Length: 506
Image 1 (cartoon, helix red, strand yellow):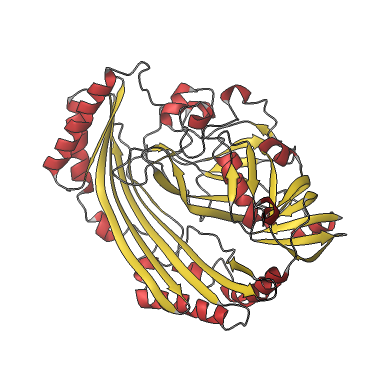
Image 2: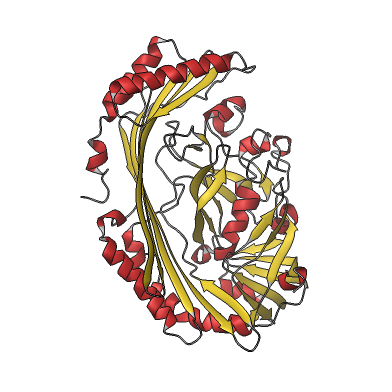
């Protein structure tokens, strides 16, 4: 199969027949909007520890959903039997729920207009479908990784895993939009674990490789140098185990993209979801300090701060051709010159705030399964590099006393996305513009606007990298989505640093 074609086994399903049955049924009842979505998502997970397979799973989620706007209210229902009569029954249920909801809806639901996209097809950028690779071959790669790590004296144990997803979606609505899409994503990881007998310290170090909208080629050297990282991690772990704890205080920070992506996710990505900013959404760490009345005036950060929302960037985890409301995906500004200038929108939110994005959605509706209704979900929210910006080494050279932060680990942020604390995986002292060995137990603490306001410089395009996660949670019932965040290395002045061991009373 050509890797840039829709999987023929998905195209072989009765997509149009079922879509037509749903939409004709809804149209006969006089709805103002109806859409039909059929999805098949396959998940495979493999885990290896110390050369031995620990677990393997391969599951598939298949079903369809019907959503309507009827009498000014939403109606939604889903099913799993791919039969015309079942689709009609599910459509009737969605209509009945809309009629019930209409009795309680005070503001009628209206959707922002969207051009019709007829018979559109989109496939994510990847070379080799990971599901076409024999499972034994994938397990052998993971076993090799752990064996190479445990060959070093400092590594007591090693683990490796691989998560793979192939997501197919068919969407059709009454306006005439019809899209068929396929997304592939992978998350390979490894972890080396060790201890220091003299200090009694136990710690670990993981790969810095981010999950990516790529295929099997990612594990064989396209987009990441696994051999180089596997060779350097044991020595870095040994140094980390012997490293002293950080002295608390105020430091300048150079933050690597492998750490900064998560700070972007928590303090900018979620904070600029319009449903949070308007107070409609409060699950999974709350609403947002970046309220709508502050649009155009909130000083989010320093003038070098330029943040975009983007559902089109190549290999992004939230990248797709069209969202789950038939909207063509886009790139747009969220923060420009340090000022809040935009939000992430779906069609209902865009209609409610027509002054945003020209009155159009920017393609941020997504459901993680056919059993769930589409909700406003995060785009690939990214900090842009400076066109002629410095290298990471040049940023380090600007610092007399500071810390270079690499890799993500734990974090904490309040219900308004304002007060936060982030740790990391590797921390290097900076003395007189040079790296001077690792320190341990570091956390940086700030408010969102103070932190981004302290950003003096961003690196150039050569320092920019996509990070991300498979497991961004939102809503009730909870939904999970994958999302990437690109960023360059960046220099922050005067950030408060805590010693986490001391804070814990150790």
